[in-house]
Structures are given as structure tokens and as C-alpha cells.
Image 1: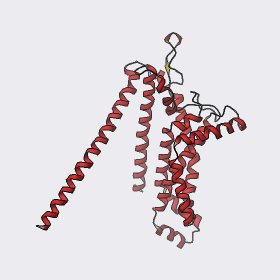
Image 2: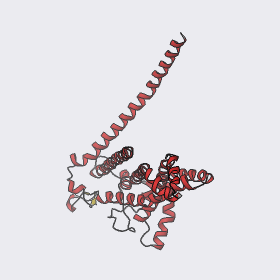
Image 3: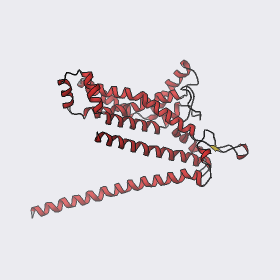
Image 4: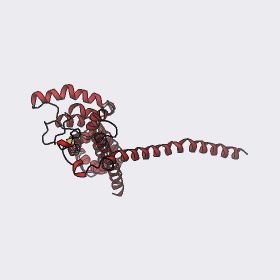
Length: 301
């Protein structure tokens, strides 16, 4: 009887657990599908409702308010797309070596006290709101660039530097976890073969942790591509091609946040912004697939 009662109690807990978690999972899937369907419908309205040709959308001419008599409207998004790609790629290239260096220092070099201080500092950097980064960039970085390098200060360079600081904790945290997860046998074997500490780090640990490090880099790139507010505050928000570090440019995210509140729902201008959102959604899918591929690649190795 005792065993039967225990079995019934366990069965009730299973049913309760299933009843609580299954609806949450189903609701999450439905919400995701609904968002994808809505964004796809709104984004493709640019082609199916307004009949805008691809040559107009994938151009660098952005004049959505221009009447037809003056050659408009033109909703070319290439300068927005170029801006997002360039600013996020440059920021990732700057942050990656610093993030890996910080991870190596925390996991392999710093004493216990240093680790207890540095790890919370990295986590604090990750937790600072993006508007604070943007405000610091607007108050310090933009005047510095204007006074010492030229231009107005609102530039691609300001956006790259702000984003570099913002994504640094992502790379450092993921790389630190990857290095710490490696077996101590690797370290002991390297030392037994006569390797120095730096040889052990460079030739053994970093290659062994490359999958986790690459995953951190991809996650940082994805965050940089989707960041809006901090970049919008320092980048200038003018649809120029990013041909110089000191010219103001615009990104997909900053373009959406700037214009969305000033357009009429269902208008050509408004649907062009929804199409930008659809491009961001497709980019997010790409980064998710890339992260999963990197993870499987590491397992396969």
C-alpha cells in the first residue's frame, strides 16, 4: 500500500508538472509564430500592396516623402544595411581580441582575488543599460572626436567604439566559461611535456576552447547588429554610405526607431520600415543557425 501511495503521489506531480510547463511551451511557440507571420505580412506589403520594385528597395536612394512628380518615393535600404554590417563587424573585430585576453587573464593568470573582482566587473558591464552607454558616448566620445579628429563627432567611429564596449562582456564571459570547462588533464599534460604557461595557453587551451570562443563572437556580433538606442545616439542617423570613419551614417535599427513614430500605419514609408524589421528578423535567424552550426562543428571535432 505504501508503494502504491508513493506511485500515485509521483504520478500526480508528473501531471501537475506537465500541466504547468506544456502550456507555457505551446504559448511561446505560438507567440513566436505569430510574430514571424505578422512581421512577414507587414514587411512584404511593400511589394504586394504598394508594388515597389526590388530595384527601388535595394538601392541607396532614401526619399520616402518625395512625390511621384519629383521622381519619388524612393525607399532604398542599402545604406541602412551597409551601416549595420560595417558598424557591427568593426565593433566585433575590436572587441574579440580584448574579450579573449580578458577571458585568459581571468581563467588562467589572475589569482583568486583577481577573479573574484574581475568576474563581477564583466557582469556589471553587461548589465549596464544601453542608454547609459549611448549617453556617455554622446557626452564624452562625440565631443572628443569632433575636437581632435574632425567632423561633427557623430560618426561611424563613435558607433563602433560604443558598440565595442557593449559587446566586450559577451565575448569575455562566454570565452571564460569555455576555458574553465576544459579538463585539467590538458594543462597537466602540456606542463609534463615541458610547455611554458604561455605555450600551454596559446597552443593547447585556446584551440581546445575555440568552439565556445567562436560562439561568443557570433553572439556578440548578433547583439551588435540588433543594438539600436546607443548607436542611434552617437552615429548621426544620416543615410550615407560608410566610406569613412568620421562621417555620420545610419543603421537598420536606428532608422526604424527614428522614423516609426512619424509615419502613418499602412503608408509606403511605414511599410518600408516594417521591411527593415523583416530583414533584422532574417538576420537573427541566420545568427541562430550559425551558433548552432558552430556548436555542432565543435562536437564533431
